[in-house]
Image (cartoon, rainbow, N blue to C red; front, side, top):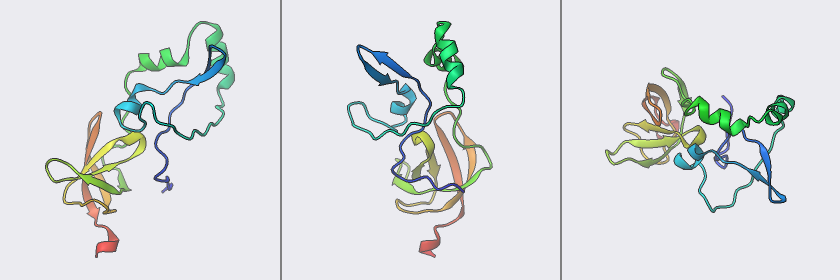
Length: 144
């Protein structure tokens, strides 16, 4: 399993655009919607070159932008799949008393019978566009 540091808030693709003599990175609205970033806050950004950078330049010269293409594709797929097993950290409790963990892009996973700070191994039972429901397959080994 790949370890993702807690400080990593968001991963997405975007293009660098010139605007009034400065350069701008467009943050998708879903990153705000999922609480991965907050407007007005300052963030550290890492940039990786894309193997298709040349293709993007060709598209831009034809009048098509990456952000337009992304809007036409619709909302992103949830970052989890039913039956997937993973380790999570429960961050808080929901209104019904269930544990709430967040995974990639701030996507919420509801974990019954879990408390803030627990790090159980879970199995994803039900996936929806903005939330997934999971069951604990192995409780937090620190509490055994």
